[in-house]
Length: 155
Image (tube, rainbow, N blue to C red; front, side, top):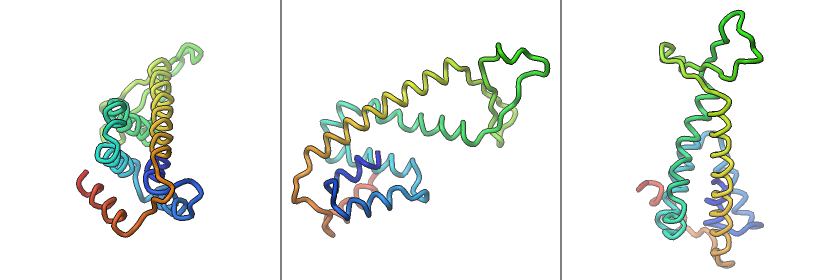
C-alpha cells in the first residue's frame, strides 16, 4: 500500500520517492492513515482501479483489525489437563473487555491468512498499474503536494 502511494507521486529511483517512503514508513503514521490516503488516491485519481478492486481494498480495514487483535489482545490457555495435540484454537480476550473472549480456530486463522495473501496480490497489481501510468516527467511539485494533502483531508 505504501509503495502504491509512493508510485502515484514518483518513479522508482527518484530520491524524493525514497524520502516519501521514509515518511510513510514511520510508525507515527498508522496503517489506518495509510489506508485512508490509499483509498482517497484510488477513488480520485484511478477510478477504474477503484471500481475493479474496491471490494478488496475495503477489506484492508478488517485485516488490520484482525492483526491488532492478534498483537494486542491477551490469551487464555486451554483448560488444565486438555490434550494439547487436539486443541485447534486459541482463546483471546480484549484487555478492556475480558468478559468477551473470542476463539480463533486454525481453520479461521488460515482463512484470514489466505485473504491477506490475496489482498497482497491485489495491492501489488494496483501498485504496478499506478507505476505503469506514471509519466516519467511527473514529480511532486508544491501544487501536487498541496493536492495530496487536500485529498487526504477530504477522505
